Image (cartoon, rainbow, N blue to C red; front, side, top):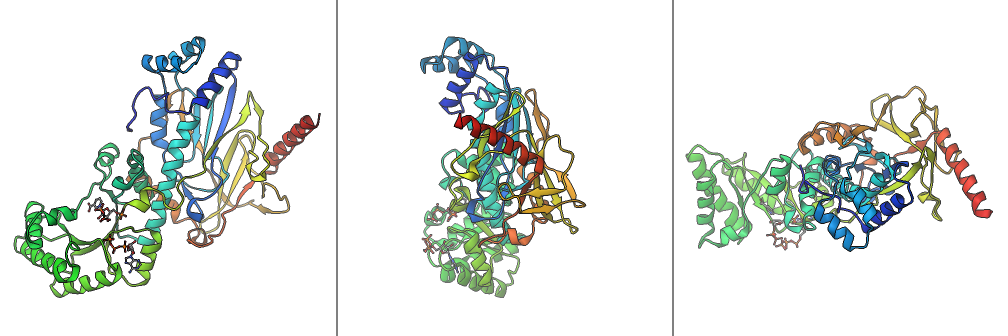
Length: 473
Ligand SMILES: Nc1ncnc2c1ncn2[C@@H]1O[C@H](COP(=O)(O)OP(=O)(O)OP(=O)(O)O)[C@@H](O)[C@H]1O
Ligand SMILES: O=P(O)(O)OC[C@H]1O[C@H](OP(=O)(O)OP(=O)(O)O)[C@H](O)[C@@H]1O
Ligand SMILES: O=C(O)c1cccnc1
């Protein structure tokens, strides 16, 4: 499910429409085209990406069409009647191949391949990038955070600081990457995510006494009480009052869930609060921390021996700080059966032509070893090569392997089962356990190697030679 359910064809940049019109008026509308989606640089200076956003994307592609009002609007923008007539009955019917949502992926490998007529494949560029780039960025941030949180609770608190409506997708992606719950009611409803909530300072401020505010909250929510203890003085007022209320709950047969620390030195305060709670026989009361947290602060809190059982994380999670955006791109790699490429001044930006498949090779312990990019019709390869330095290569004969992309949409029909973000996260966890630790570290992670088959490089080099000779002519 998603927020946009019908006539989603305007979710695009205008140049996609002007190109589509151009293809149509040049009688190219039946040309069969292949586009690849991939990205070039891991966000957060990290060593991997969690691929996310696929299910939302497929849903919106199913509804990629134009209403009467849409067509009237497009007419005013200057698009021609003949093309608008074509758009009136437009439906997205291309075939889509993709990595599984939640797959751990690496730069320069195709994550999604779209095969269709040139108009439909072109028109969805912006939408595909908008969905996959953002959710993958946030899922990756969440995975990095989960990596330092271990098995403790991790709630997404981000909606208030998210980039507008992006917050709805951010909460979904946060759970795919590793958050257990969200405070975002809309996303919880839309995507079946477990919902949690404590209370803000306003609740406590609205009463004359902190104790009165705590008591009232516990009376109304006896089996889900988490008390925010830092409104006046965490150790002198908040924690002692929370202990009184926890004891009162105990007398009524309930167990208070926890307290929340939202300012100050979280290591110091959590240790002191733990001691006070334990001395009162409240070992079961959890300490939740929030306040501008990220993977680095949490790692430092771990190093300091902080006594924190769960985290609420907002701003840094849902804005993908400090990456801002994922540089995913969507490039034409084949037209009417002919592999195509794009040359660039920047050698890294030369595209890989043709229909390709991605094979993951595993070492004898089942850990990721290499990813290989082969031509789609290649059965296997013995060696994987660096894209530009052919002396750098690896033998992959004898390694167990898995093909990573499969068909997920055909003729407007979604071919995969709908999964909740929590279910997708189960796959992330399974795969993350197979990623060697050296790719997970925050500082200078080891680069995971993605190699190419000899055949694919030879196709590329032939086209390059051909293009260069044309430029010289
Ligand atoms: N022991 C600690 N070690 C490392 N970082 C910490 C520790 N305790 C808190 N932090 C982090 O330091 C930052 C403190 O920020 P800041 O000074 O703005 O908060 P505050 O003054 O305690 O609270 P606020 O401004 O929200 O009332 C937060 O990002 C917090 O997560
Ligand atoms: O810090 P984040 O990771 O974004 O987590 C969300 C923050 O939102 C709430 O604060 P609020 O909006 O009341 O502002 P505050 O920072 O003044 O507490 C909550 O108490 C967290 O501190
Ligand atoms: O439930 C909470 O405690 C919460 C939710 C959003 C932001 N800050 C806190």
